Length: 188
Image 1 (cartoon, one colour):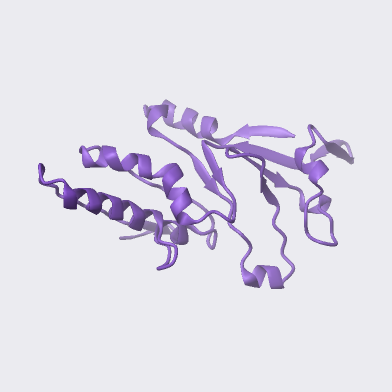
Image 2: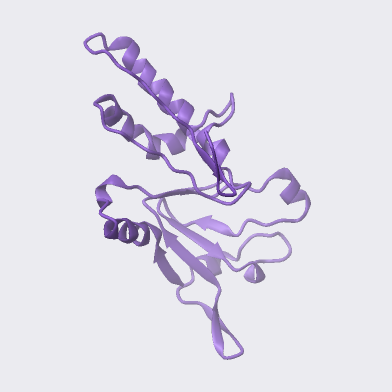
């Protein structure tokens, strides 16, 4: 299967614009199916191979009985089948700095992505967390979360204010903004 390094691809684009690779971490969260999607017979076509590699499978190659992928196809190398004259790829592999599956809680995602930024922020370094995806992909859930599973923004502010509360040697001015772009309209 073709291996696409999403981190490297995105870093090359940013490097052309003068942004250092060291300042960027690309993470992905593969969300689980919703109840409505399961009820409608939807199937998950993404699988994590390890903590960095995500496989997106061709739904036509999945076992139609239970909606699960054939594990041999998930790990198969360069498996292709002929359709007309062009080979059709059965699966695509993507490499990220870190990848999470549908069972990951926001705390786990926070620890693997945003938490390391907090100490820098407390020293005056600006940080940005950018969530990108289609409508319904879980961006707001990941960033804001719920009472039971607080999001990355809530968790980062929690840690910042915990440090500010106990650190009496400095005066802090904490500012956080949350911006949403939807259909090319900015909501602040």
